[in-house]
View 1 (cartoon, helix red, strand yellow):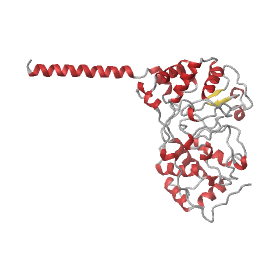
View 2: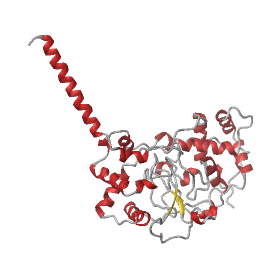
View 3: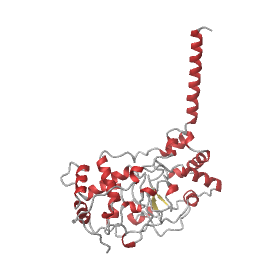
Length: 348
């Protein structure tokens, strides 16, 4: 065989091999029906905002970890939303100032940047509004007023410089509004990429066979009616007990905010990312394990009774949503030092 003929044969073989590889890759891509529900909805975005500069995010992290923003200097945002524990404290309801118990379970702060609203009852439209609430809640951080918050921060020269760096266009940047903007900027970038993200990106092998079966059941059963979008939740408020009334109805959810009959028992749908690591579940922290939670949701939201094998498959899929914690964020920062002007702890 002459050299040109051999070269042509080799090229033809290479093209055939390449075509086969591309065909296999195309075959390996997840079906559209399994990835479409988790794309970003048009009304929400997980992308950082233009104002979320590194200086603002760094300041937000300090504020998130600083217990001096509580009346007795013993509670920070991280107390109830422990970043090293997937953003929760693993108790039904958190303990706040003076040992007082809250009404609702503390949800994770990971992957919440694109939520339709904050808090279980959706009363805060943005992360900025949400960040202010716990500061003055008597059952949480219990600060008496914004003057105490600002007096605390302005008493420390290092904080003043950090606010000036984070908000360079403002003459007096240490404000309550900028406190919440910085905390929100920090929280918006708290994401936990997982194997499920590789699957969504086209890697069909990222999920095991059982996890894939669980995902297919999750989608076909209608779970994505509520748990959709990049966070697998957080894009709507839904009635708990949609098909079959939920037995515990003391907390009426959104209705307590709006007094609209349509909002009885409506709660913001939680993210399912890292759900394996964020027990106990529901607004009241009344469900301790994930298989039990899956059975309850199937019954009360979908009107279905799942077999043990189906529950195991769905739970396996939910495990694929467990992501990597950002090491840079979970490490407690070195906080600015208090001065003689810093308000003292107040246990009253």
